[in-house]
Each structure stands twice: as C-alpha cells, then as structure tokens.
Length: 95
Image 1 (tube, rainbow, N blue to C red):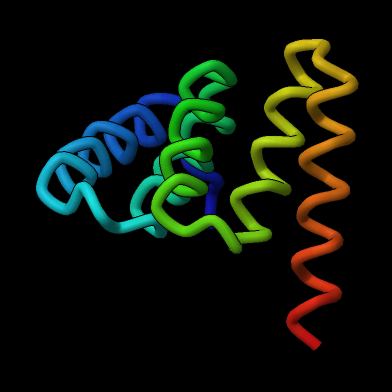
Image 2 (cartoon, rainbow, N blue to C red):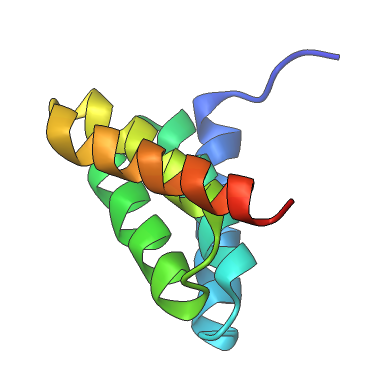
C-alpha cells in the first residue's frame, strides 16, 4: 500500500480539526492531529496540539514525547529535552 501523500495528510488534519472542535476535551484527538501536523512539517501546530492534549490530560507521556520531537525540529533543544524527560518519568511511574 502506498504511503499517504501530503494532500491526504492535509485532509486528515482538516478532519481532525473538526473533531477537535466538536470534542474540545478529547486529548487523544489533539494528539492525533499533532501527529498529522508533524507529517505535514507544521511543527508549531504540532506543539500547540500537544500542549492542548497535555492541558487536558497532564499525565500523557505520548503527548510530551511528540512535543519533544516537534520542539527539536524547531531547534528548541532545552524544551525538547525537558519534554522527553517528562515523558520518561511518566512512563516509569506507570509501572
């Protein structure tokens, strides 16, 4: 199966925006849209979405991990490191 094109990712992100607007309390919807934004190389939007997911669900390691990746892409090494560490701490505390 061929990988999705940039157009398909943009359409996915648009659909996820509608979902986020309907379900403003769904951290998973924001994380999913953040993943689509990462594929579109829209790192600022990925950070905004992961930050919203974290606001809704503070103990959400996947959101911290993805925000770390977006921050690193934008050159925010300190912020990326802090988010990566937080994700690792949360993952360790879940066991």
